[in-house]
Image 1 (cartoon, rainbow, N blue to C red):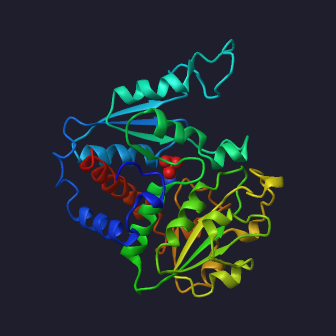
Image 2: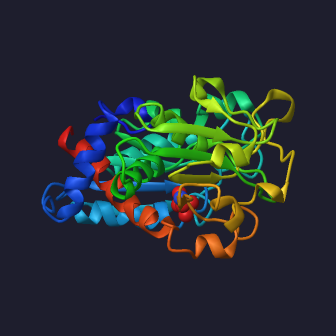
Image 3: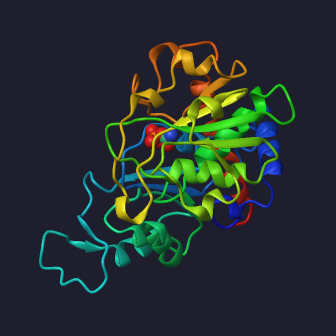
Amino acid sequence: MRNFLSVNDVESVDSIVKEALELKKDRYRFSELGRNKTLLMIFFNSSLRTRLSTQKAAMNLGMNVIVLDVNAGMWKLETERGVIMDGDKTEHLLEAIPVMGCYCDVIGVRSFARFESKEDDYNEKILNQFVKYSGKPVISMEAATRHPLQTLADLITIEEYKDKPRPKVVMSWAPHPKALPQAVPNSFVEWMNRTDYEFVITHPHGYELSEEFVGNVRIEYDQDKALEGADFVYAKNWAAYADENYGKVISKDTSWTISTEKMALTNNAYFMHCLPVRRNMIVTDDVIESERSIVIPEAANREISAQIVLKKIIENL
Ligand code: CP
């Protein structure tokens, strides 16, 4: 594997999930593989899980890790080419990226959608500059349009908890006070499309995701109907994607919150969310604290998803 930016960097979803589950049985088995290799993790946005799990995964492989918060102690970066840099931005990304590449063997980048330009977001303007100018393999630690490390962890978790070959998985939009990117739902849909699970997306009108990701997945606008018989409920908020409302919150309808009543419509489903989660907006206290909530094992599997990806990249260096 050269880069890990999307499901397209994986030969087979089924195989990488199986390999990840095998790795989980003994995560320290390859502790010499990353000796004298350095992972540089660059954060343009905040993180708890990605930061800790990816660092831990690299340490399991014997790698050195450098973490850089772009917004803390670093020169303020200009990202637009052609700008006369007479303002407060001291360094251009076009020098910063190759400099960062000098000090590491693999670069992880977290750079969310900015919702300033749909074109820039969906062309992955920041992430692709790292791919182009760093000279090093790049791992997406959540970019503008995708969060593949999260989705791989989600699929590992579903595989661990499913009790039938073809479970019904429902991804449900849920309300949130602020505009959130579509990266997690896009990725989840993109990867689910490479499994043979039964998969349904439910959201209010106006929250349609990009057709590039959704393809032929069933969309059910009636959340109650979608939840019927579900084995897994994957809750997530996202902002509108359509041009006229791109990046906007167009509904905070709390009738979409995943509650005990909603979960009662399912086949005693497991509740999943990538976290962080707004309680009693996305999901009620009762549901997230219930025995069927698997948000913590899901987060724990972030270490495994990052480790299998790093292992494959190191093996290809
Ligand atoms: N799920 C996830 O990526 O969490 P963080 O934003 O805390 O890294």
